[in-house]
Amino acid sequence: MAVKLYWFDNFLPISHVCYHDQKIQGRMENGIKKTPSSDKINSGMKKTPSSLFSITELDDFYFQHLSRSPRLNIERKISLDGCSISGNLRHIDSHECISPMGGFGHRAGFDTPNSTSDNVYEPHMMVVAAWDALRKSIVYFRGQPVGTVAACDVTSEEALNYDQVFVRDFVPSALAFLMNGEYDIVRNFLLKTLQLQSWEKKIDRFKLGEGVMPASFKVLHDSHKKIDTIMADFGESAIGRVAPVDSGFWWIILLRAYTRSTGDSTLSETPDCQKGIQLILSLCLAEGFDTFPTLLCTDGCCMIDRRMGIYGYPIEIQALFFMALRCALQLLKPEGESKELLERIMTRLHALSYHMRSYFWLDFQQLNGIYRYKTEEYSHTAVNKFNVIPDSIPDWLFDFMPNRGGYFIGNVSPARMDFRWFALGNCIAILASLATPEQSIAIMDLIEERWEELVGEMPLKACFPAIDGHEWTSVTGCDPKNTRWSYHNGGSWPVLLWLLTAASIKTGRPHIAKKAIDLAERRLLKDGWPEYYDGKLGRYIGKQSRKYQTWSIAGYLVAKMMLEDPSNLGMISLEEDREKPVVKRSSSWS
Ligand code: GLC
Image 1 (cartoon, rainbow, N blue to C red):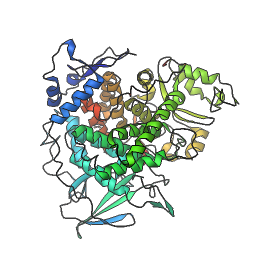
Image 2: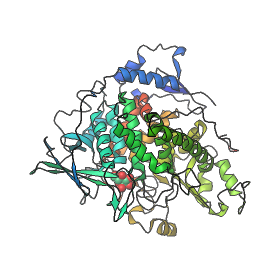
Image 3: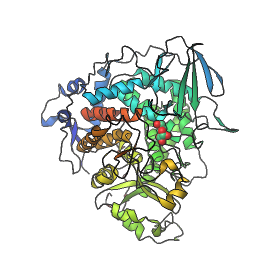
Image 4: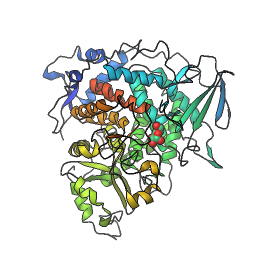
C-alpha cells in the first residue's frame, strides 16, 4: 500500500497508489483565487522535496495553523436556556429584535462572505449569489442565529416542514460557516439541539429514548407578545412517524468539525456536551438480540426519509454510525461514565469495520463469488453465511459492475443483499475511513467508470438504480413522490456535491470534484438551487423539487471552498486508524 503524501505547494496528495496523475489545477482554473489562509499555510514551507508530509503531519500542521487563528471568545455566554415547556412548545421571552422576514431574514451588517473574517474568499458571481441565499435562510432565536431553514421557496404553495431547521440539512450550512470563520451560528445550533435532546419525546403513548435528537425544529416568532417559541419534531410529526437515527450522528460529527475548526475544545468538554454524546451512543451500543454489529433501523430513518426499502441495516446509517463513533473517541473525556463507554466504542468499531469491509463490500470478484454461492450451508464453515440466494442478484448489476471499482452495497441481512449503490453512505465511508484505502480508491474508480449513470448531468444520484413497476409498488408502497428516477428513487441531489468533493480530495482525485462542480455550475443558479433533479441523467428539475433549497446552496459552497483549500477537509475527514489490522479477503482489494 502506498503512503499518502502531500505536497504543500498545492496541498494535494501527490502519491496515492495510482490513477491520479492529475494534480489539482482547479484553484486558478475555475476562477477562484487562493485564499489568504492557504497562503499563510504555504508561506514558510520550503518548496523542496523536504516539504513532503505524511497525512498525519498534515493533520498536525493543520492543527497548529488553527491554533494560531483567532480563537473564539469562549467567555461569551449564549443564553439558550431558561425555557418553560409544555409538550413540544416552549415559550421564551424575546428581548432582541426578530428578523422582519419572519425569522430568516438577511441581517444588516452581514456581508458576503463575511465582513469581519480575515478568511477572505474571492468569489465569483455564483458564489456571491450562494452566500446571499444562504444568509437569507438563517433562522434567529432571541436574536441569535441558530440554524438555516431547509428551503426558502416562496413559490411553493405549501411549506410543509421545509420552513424548519433540519439537523441533517444544517450540516453543509455549518461547514460553510466554519470554513468562513463564522463560528457562532454553529455553536448556537449545537447548543440549541442539545437542549432539545433533553425534551421528553413521545409518539402517542410511547416514549422515545433519552438520547434521540430531533429531525428538525422551528422557531415561531410572536411579534405582538415578543415571544419566541420553539417547536421540535422527533418523528412524531414527520410523514411516516419515523425518528431520525442520523440526527444524533450528525450532531456528534458536527461537534467534532466545530472543535477541529475553531481549535476550541471548551464546548465539547462541557458536561452537557459530554452527556449529549453519551446519551446518543447509549442508544446504539445497548446490548440486545443483535447478531451483527451494524445498527438495525426502520425505513425512512435518514436522508431517505420515506419508504424506500432501506430498512434493516442501511449503509447510510452504518457509515454515519461508524464516523460518529470515531468522532466520539476524540471528543469524550476519559473519565467517569465515559471510561466504560470508550471501551464499548472501541470494541464496536472493531467489529463494525470487520463486518462492513467483509460483508457489505462488493466488487467484480466478490460478485462472482456470490453468483457461485452454495445455499443452505449450516455451521461455522459456511461461506454463504447469510444464505443469500444467487438468483436474487438483479440483472442490472452484472452490467453495472466494472472490472475496476467497487462499493458498499445498500444493505446486508439474512438472505437479503440490497445491491443498490447509495451515494451518501459510500462517501461517508471514505471520509470516516470505514473503507480501507484500497476500497476508497475502488469507490472512486466506480464513480469514474459509471459516471453517466451516477453523475450524468447533475451530481449526484442519491441511489442507483431506480426501482420501477411491481418492485416500486411493493417496496415504496406506491409512493408517487418516489417514482422511478425521481427524488430518493434515483433522483440527483446537488447537496451530495460536497460529499463527492470531500471524497475526491481525500482519495487524491480533485479532478473528479472539479468536473462535478463544473456540471453543477451550468444549472444550479439558473434553476434556482433545486432540491433535486429527475431522470436517468438528472436533466430535469425534480417533479416536486423545492427551489432555494438551502443544502443545495451550502453544499455547493462547501464543495467550492474545499476544492480551493483542501485543508478544509480535516474538519470532516478521519484518517485510517493504523493500529487496526486490515481485513484480509480473497477479493481484489485484499
Ligand atoms: C426531504 C429529504 C430529507 C431532508 C428534508 C428537508 O424530506 O428527504 O432528507 O432532510 O427534505 O430538506
